[in-house]
Amino acid sequence: MNPTPEGGRLEGRRALVTGGASGIGAACARELAAHGAHVTVADLDGDGAKAVADEVGGTAWVVDLSDTRALDSFELDTDVLVNNAGIQRVSAVQDLDPEDFRLVHRIMLEAPFLLVRAALPGMYERGWGRIVNISSVHGLVASPFKSAYVSAKHGLEGLSKVTALEGGEHGVTSVCVNPGYVRTPLVERQIAEQARVHGIPASEVMAKVMLAESAVKRLVEPHEVASLVGWLTGPDGAMVSGGSWTMDGGWSAR
Image (cartoon, rainbow, N blue to C red):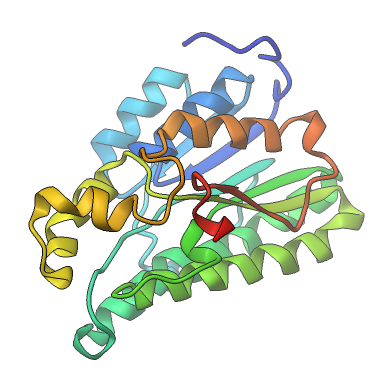
C-alpha cells in the first residue's frame, strides 16, 4: 500500500466502510487507510472482509445489513462513514418479487439510515465527521427494470441531504458519490439478467445497455471512485456537503 502525498490527513481517525470486502468498498478501504485512518471493513463476506482488513491494517466486521432490526439500538464510534453496501435485482415492476424490493431497501436505505443515526452522536460530540454515501447515477436518473435499486438510491440521496442540513453546524458533512457502471462483481453479475430482460445476447449488454448513455465508453474503475471519496473526506472537502458528485462519463448530462 503506497500512501498518497497527503497520506496522514486522516491520521488518528476511524473509518467504517460497508460492503468493504470487494469492489468499490475495498478500494475505499485502501484509500482511507492510505490517508492514515484505521478502517473497519464491514461485509457479509467474512473471509473477504478479513482479507481486506488485514491488507490495510484495519478491522473486519462481519455483519448482515439486511437484519436492520439488529441496528436499531446500535452505537457507532467512527469519524468517517462510507455507506457502500448494495445488491441488485433486475426485473420489470410487475414481475419483481416484493421481498426482493424490501431486501434492496433494507440494505441500501434502511441500513445507511441506521448507521448514520448511530454515528452522528459521536461525530457531533467531537465536532467533526464525514459521511459519504455511495449512490449511483441511478440516484439521479432512472433506467427500466431497476425499480428497487433506483428507488433505494433516490431515497439515499434524500437521506444524505437531510443529514447535511442537520450536521453542518456540528462539523459533519454528508455527500453522495454517483458513479455509472463500475467494474465490480455486482455489475458483472448483472450481465445475464440484463440480457434476459432486454432480449439481447449477453455479448451486447455492455454496449447497448451499460454504456449506452455514457459519453465516455468504458466502465468506471473502483479506484477512481475511491479517489474521490478520499478527497471528500480530506481537509479540502470541509465545505462540500449536501451534494451529489457524479462520476458517470457524462450519462447524467443528457
